[in-house]
Length: 416
Image 1: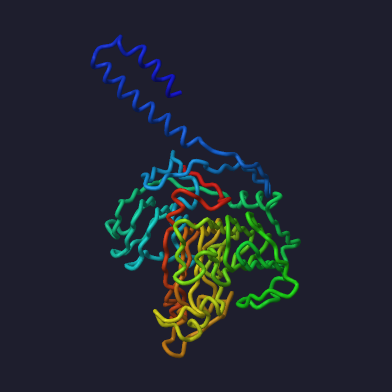
Image 2 (image 1 turned 90 degrees about the vertical axis):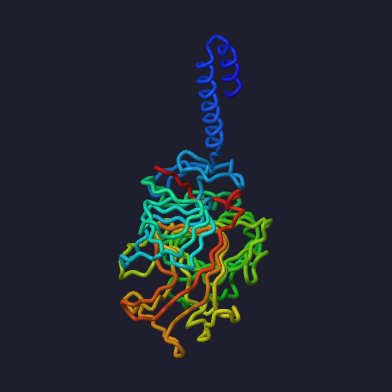
């Protein structure tokens, strides 16, 4: 189309005076630019068509990713069409208690951010990349190295992880059924291999994961896995993998790439490993319900009971912290922590360290992206209930490889 335009342009140009020639030249540049952008935006590969729970969708994956160092384009139109194109995505910033969780003085965000809601920002928060939000509150707060855009455009996504569901049902995938939704499934990864087992929900300790002698070991690479019901997962992953569940996904211990499985869990710039983790679990958003979505379990490996009653910043990582790599997406729920010392009816768990009265569990070492429907806590003071400081400090880094390559089978997003 560009060649045809230039041929027509050259044939009519000599017929007009200098003023018209300049106008036509400017118009030509604009048309060619628009055609070029349209070619980039429309370069897609249709993967499949699916109907699930009476909701039909045809989904597409962008086959022309944004190049490293290129400017971040406005959301519509533009080639940024996957969750991993952003470091942080949220739909609702208020918690189930109606509170805002502030981006605080020690929060530094190293990748692009999108929120459909207002973003509460403290003066010391630093945003190193582009930001799109409904508004920043209070105005003028925070440091934005690339500025920010306040917009009424909303990011949209489906309630269901169709891409992973369909890929899991293919010849290279693994789909785990759950008749009556009575079972819980566990996956423990060892590179290309995972131990897989199931049990009747509620019959196993919620903070211990131990594969039984009859667990099945499967080679799951390259692959997509989908589990009906709740999923407990941990381990080190090799290759390109997508994991999805219709219920809660509980992170029982580190879930990391095999080439970055030791502290400080830095992902090599040339790592061939990519991971997508998606939960379809829906949260009601009510204060009397535990968070649902992707949940960091209160296990001994994740720092249970104030990191084994010896949490001190800078000391050994054993029995504290959790490291996670990849893009983590809670389509209808939150990314949060289990047992927040609320002393509420859904979970009466209370732990107060005898040394200082807290339940500090370490750090979350994230390298990748996070996205969720509704925000919830990974650390809180519980001033309205028990007053026990609970949870994790954050060491979050955007995986810069996502600018050119994306983890597989992510749910599609759109803007309107």
